[in-house]
Image (cartoon, rainbow, N blue to C red; front, top):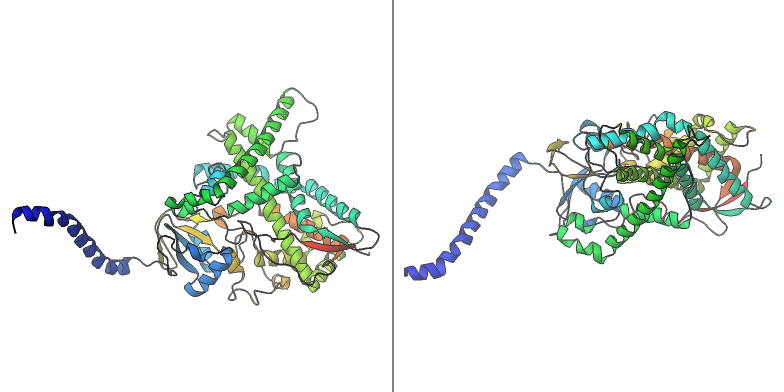
Length: 509
C-alpha cells in the first residue's frame, strides 16, 4: 500500500484507535483496583443520565424507606450526576451526626434554597464555616436561648388564651361545633412567632398561602441541581416562575418588616418615651449591624435571611406537630381520654393550663414524642454534605456526597420499636428516649452541629396548646366522618394534605 493511501485511510484512524486502546487498558485494570481500595455502599440499579431519580416518587421518605429494606441502612443513590447517601438506621445516623459530625456538617448547594433563602445566608442552609457559626450564635443567643424562650411565656399564654376563647365563642349552648384545627394551629403559631420576632402580628389568607407555597417549594425537585443540562425542565414545568414569585413576595414582606423597625428605631433615638426594653429580634439584628459587633459586617440581606429562618422554621413545623398530634388522638379515643384525664387532674379548679404546669404532664409529653416518632415534621431532615473522603460503617464515602437522613424510616424501624405502625404514647412513659438529639432512635430535629436550635421554642408551644385544648373541650370526629384522611402533603415539611377538622363541645367540670 502506498504512503499516500496510508495517509488518506489509516492515519486518520490512528488517534481514535490509540485512544480506544488506552481506555480499554484502563478499564481492564480498574476493577481489581476498585475492589481492593474502594467499597461503596450498596446501590439499587440505575438508569442512564437519570440514575435513581425515577425511584424517588411523590413521597420520598416512603420510597427511600422501601429501597433501604432491600439495600440496607446505608444506601448510595445517584440522582443525575449527584451521589446521595441515604441513612435509614439509628446506628448509621449516629455515625453521621455524632461520630463524624464535623465531616458531614456542610450543606449542599441547591438552586431552590439559594433562590428562596438569600443565596444561603440563613442559618439552616449556610455552608459550614465562620459565617454560619456567627449567624447561629446570634440566632440562638437572641431568640432561642433558654432564657429568651422563657421570656416569651406571656406571649405564648396570651395567644393560646385567645385561641381557646375564639373556639369557645364559636360554640353554641352545649351543642358541638365543627372547628378547623389545621387553620387555627397555623394562625396561632404564626402569631406567636411574629410577635416575638417582629414585634407585632402579620397574617391573612394571602400570608398563609405564601408560607404554604414556600414550604412546598423547599421540598421540590429541581432537575437543574442534578442534571444541569436539563435545567430548562424547571422553566418549562413552572418551577422557576414559582420560585421567583415566592422569593419576591417574601422579600417585599421582609423589606416591610425591616423598614418598620428602622423607622421605629429613629423614633427611639429621638427620645420617644416608653419604648426602652421592648426590643424584638429584628431590633437586635439592626443593633448588631450598627455596632459591627460580629467582627465582620452584617448586611440587610443577612438580616432578612435570619428573620426568614425565624419565621418559616418557627411556624410550619410547630403547627404540623400539633395537627398530627390531634389527628392521632382523635383516631385513638383511649389515648385522648387518658391525656384529658391527666390534664384536668393537674389543672384542678384552674381555668387553664399554664407553662409552669407542663412538667407534670407526663402522658401529654409522651403523646408529643409518639407524634414526632410517627410523623416527624421534616422526615428527611435537611440534607448534609461530606467535606472529605471518609469511611462510614466500613463503606467508603467520597467528598461532596450529599447525605439524606430518613428519620421517618428510623422512627418506624421494627428493630428499635415494638409495633412501630401503631400509635402508642405509653411506649415513652418508662423510657428515657428524648428528641433533643442525643438518642438517635428519635431525631425529628436532627442532631449535632446542624441540629435544629429551636426545639425548646417549638415544643413548649405544642405542649401548651394541646394541654389547653384537652382541658377546655371534648373532641370527636365530625358527624358523618368515620375515619380521618391521613394523606400527606408534599414539600420539605410533611403536614396533612387536608386541614384537620374536628367537633368540639365545652367540657363539663
